[in-house]
Length: 401
Ligand SMILES: [Fe+2]
Image 1 (cartoon, rainbow, N blue to C red):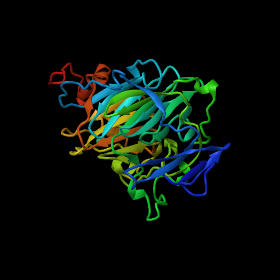
Image 2 (image 1 turned 90 degrees about the vertical axis):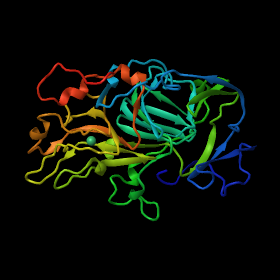
Image 3 (image 1 turned 180 degrees about the vertical axis):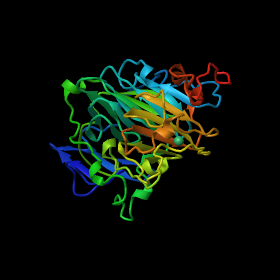
Image 4 (image 1 turned 180 degrees about the horizontal axis):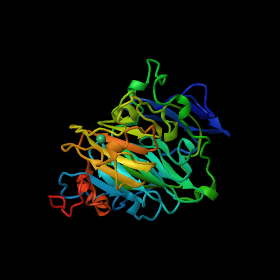
C-alpha cells in the first residue's frame, strides 16, 4: 500500500464491459477491510473462481508448527545457519518464533515450485537473506535481489523462482497488516520528505504473468491457501492468473534495505529511529551501515536497556555487530521483556571514538511475548544467556530447558 499503480490494459471505468480478443473479461476487486480499505481491480481472462477440487494438506514445522511446551525466561540465540531444509518455498519453510500478531520463519528452498501459495492469514514480509530471482504473482512478476524486503499483500497468489544459487529468506507474517508507518505520510498520503525512504525506492511488478505452458505446466494447476493456520490445496483446470491488466493500491512491493536512509544523532538514538515497517503491535527496524553519533564523548554502542513492554529480536545479516559477541550472520537473538539487555562486556568501551558502523541487521519489537517453536529450539545456542558474565564460567542457565 505504497501508492497507486497500474499495469496492462484497463477499461476507462470500473464495472463496465471489457473485452480481450472478443472475450468478456472477469473483473475482480481485491479489497481490504470490507470495501473501506485499499483495493486493486484486476481483469482475468479466466475467472479465478473455477477450482474443481479442494484437498487438505499439511507441512509440519510450517503449517502446523509445534510450539515449545515450556519457555523459561532468558535471552536466546537461534542459529538459522544450522537449519537444514529441502523442497520448494513451502516445504522448506519453518516457523521459529510467533505470537498472536506475527510469525517469523526461515525459508531455505532447494527446488523451484510448480504450485502457487496464497496467505489468507495476513501480509508476508520477506527479507532476502541470500540470492536473487522473481516472485511470480497475480499482480505480475516482481524481481528481487539480495537484501530486499518484499511485501506480499494478504491473499495474493504467488510462487518463487530463481536463477543460480537457491535463495534464503527470513519472513514475517503479520496477522493484521504490514505497511510503512503512518507518521511517514502527509495528508495527501504522500511519503514525507523527512521519512527514511521515498516513493522512488519502492518497486512494483515489472510485467504481467501471462500463461506459458513451458513455465506453468499443464492442468490441474495447484494453489495452496493458508487460513487460520490450516492449509488447503485448490485445483483448477485453467491457469488462474492470466491477467490482462490491473490498477489500485494493493500490490506486491520490493524495497532494498540499502535504500534505507539512516539517521544519526549528536548522541546515541534509540532503535525506534530506524523504524521501517509497522504491523499490528509490532515494528520492524533496519540497522544499516552508517556514520555514528558525533558528540566528542559519544558512546556509539547501544546503552543497556530494559524495554519493559516489548520482546526484541535481531536477525543479523552482515558487518561487525558492535554490541554482541558470538553472533554470526544468520543468527537471531531474542531479548525478552522482563529482563534487561545491553552490550557484551568490553563492547561498550571499545566503541568510544569509532566513526562508522558496518552492521546490517533487521530488528523486530513486539508487544506480546514471542514464543519459540520446537524447530527454533533445535538450533538454539543454549549458553547464550550466560555470555554476559565477564569471567568464563562453567555454570548453566539456572532454569530447566
Ligand atoms: Fe534492545
